[in-house]
Length: 155
Image (cartoon, rainbow, N blue to C red; front, top):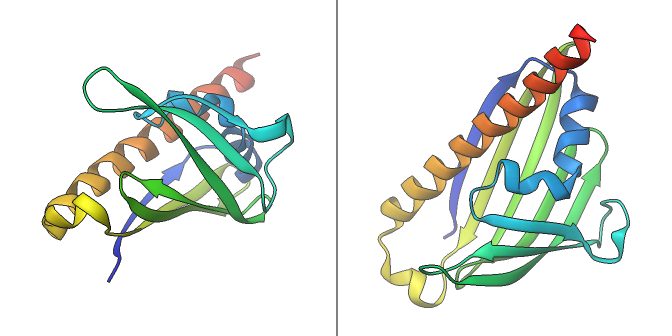
């Protein structure tokens, strides 16, 4: 049975602003703590079938490459990915709903099918870690979008 987590946050910014930030994969290191560099293979915009290539933090000071595929995309409301999380297969996605013209309800979900050495980690411990990281990521997305929204309003 997969481990599943969800994080939800209200962002003071319109859906299109949140969407634009999420789809700018070059900015993922700003909010994803394990991502050091990120790009879409071939330089095209995100679309179903795209591959997102990352250089990620590894064990100790090492880095590793990883790739995630875009499995679904419905602009500006929904995007999902599939790829590895350690030795396990994982899927994750973002769903955006407008609360009004200037506020967005953002939800991130993550599902992990435990495999390999990760099966040795108790599920509740791994789920708690994934939840904590996801909550931190959502707070960082909120801060970045709200900061940009404030700057746009002031100029």
